[in-house]
Structures are given as structure tokens and as C-alpha cells.
Image 1: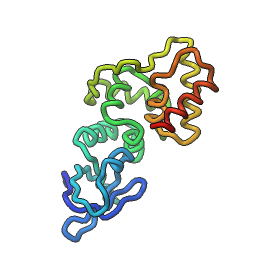
Image 2: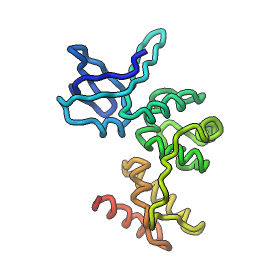
Image 3: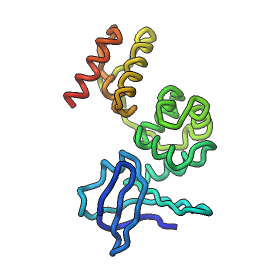
Amino acid sequence: MIAFLCGVLAGKTADTAYIDCNGVGFAVGMSANSLSDLPAQGSSVRVFTYMQVREDDISLFGFTSEDERNAFEKLISVSGIGPKVALAALSSYRPGDLADALASEDVTKLSRIPGIGKKTAQRMILELKGKLASSALPPAEGLFSPPEEDKEALGKVIEDLLALGFAPAEAELACKGMPRGLDEGRALQYALKKIGGA
């Protein structure tokens, strides 16, 4: 079992990092969040790894934190979730955010992960609730907590942002702090303006 790699970042794609360890190049599948955490090409890196051995393939997956690797291992233990879907989950949400969604039994939020439908989201909650480390951050002042009448509009805005290609975490962040009582059009304008000013 390869527990971690130390080497030089030789390059990366949208879902893979190439790490040169003393002249041996490893292709390591990674989440979008971990890839964004990596330093510039040519820099020294250390990534935690999980090696999957199958009859016809050996794959290596990498993580910039042990929390993310632990979350990955828990995710692939759920029936119907393989490494690709687990990485999609960790590309959409950081481990703490994922733990919070599980703790609050937020099926809608989990279902926004590519490859995860409502039934798989419910299975995730059943099997993983309380097993991932929470972000444990106190609620920031002014975060958007909509009353019932605003939740439907918020859901539509998030769906609109996802359709435009934004990640679930980006869409939710764009809606935080949104004034109450906005219709869908004005709410979408607010979110897009917030993203543009980020």
C-alpha cells in the first residue's frame, strides 16, 4: 500500500496530477479541490494516497489532506459509490462541508453531486452520518438562512447556477447573505454579481 508520495509536481490535468518521485512518474487521480491546492508545476509536493487494486487495473488517488483521504475511503464504502463519484463529491464539497450535509440530512445538497441521485444520497446519510469530521465552524454572521417561503426561489437559483456550469459549493456560497423576498430573476442577478466580484 502506498500511503503518500513526496516528489515534484510535473504537471496536472482537470482530474490528475503527475508527480515525479526520483525519476518515476506517478499519475494520481485527485479532486478539483485538491488539485487547486497544489503548488505551481515544478514545486515540491507531498500527497496522501489511496491505491485501488483490481484484476485489470491499479489506480492511485491523491489528497492534500488526511481528512480528504479519510472521507474518500468512507465514501467508496457506500454501495453504488466508486472512486470517480467519490472524487466528484470531494470536488463539489470539502470534507467538512460534506460532513455537515450528512449531519443535517440534506438530500437535496448531496443530490447535486454528479453521479449521486436521491436514493444514493439517502444511503450516504444512513451509512456515513456522524462518521466524517465536521467543519466545526460556528455560523458566520449574516449567512443566508431562508424562511420556508424563500427556500423554493433559492433552490431554483442554485439550479440555474449549476446549469451555467458553477460547482455546487460555488452556487451555495453565491447565495449566502442574499436579501430575503427576492424573486428568482433578481436573486440570480445577486448571485452572479457576487460571483463576479469574488
